[in-house]
Length: 61
Image 1 (cartoon, rainbow, N blue to C red):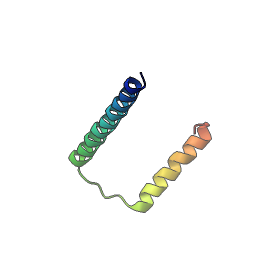
Image 2: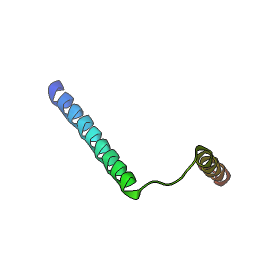
Image 3: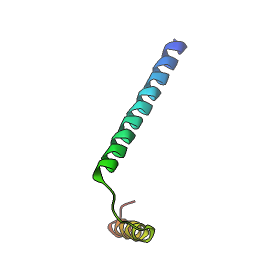
């Protein structure tokens, strides 16, 4: 019985990994297709800070 449970667990983990890889590949492809934008590190940090502040103000975590 232990072997069957082990095989099921391993298969589930493999399926999860494959699903994550599929999603990652899709997102990478989507990013490449969307092109590039001029975006600075400072702009990114400001945007993230603004989002964090909004989350804190709305009570989200």
